[in-house]
Length: 271
Image (cartoon, rainbow, N blue to C red):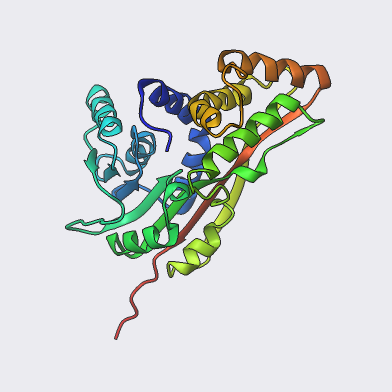
């Protein structure tokens, strides 16, 4: 949905720094470890794949797949620059996954939200995972945002981003639906955790900068949908505006919910 322009790839790089600890904790808690073979779906520029490659070490292997060639080109350049040899990147449509061998873990971040049918997508991917293997996803529940006391610019921009995403048909509450998605795909009830990026008064720059980047990305859509007038929002000024408003009222600004869920593929019962 967000595309893979140079500016968008930079936004993703900035975002990856902020949420890396959340995804790392998911993979560690789920059991991704040395020697494993891992499939990272919707890999984009490879941030999650590189994190998994660090955890599986030289005896393991990570395959990152995505349908966007521009993002994959960046991921391959990063792997070469870092001399990371236990990760590879392949172009693949998640509607038709096909692999010669199975994986010890299936992982993904911010990918099920944008699937037409996340249950069908996950169901198609599960045969890639060995019996007893890990399934771990980091997704968003966009409804989790808030500010206390209210910060008008923060609340409005969060709402606008949600409206622009919902207009594409994406599931803006897929994070909260992960247990039902896992169940419908035949997985056991997952272990699930929720976190959020939060700013506090004048110390809200990180959260505000992240939201401003999203507004910049979806601004053309917002204007096309008639949700904002051309020139009404200036993404370059939003970070400072949100921080100033939060500081003036001593507010907390709470981002959308980062939901982590993991389970295992049922082992085949012996005869």
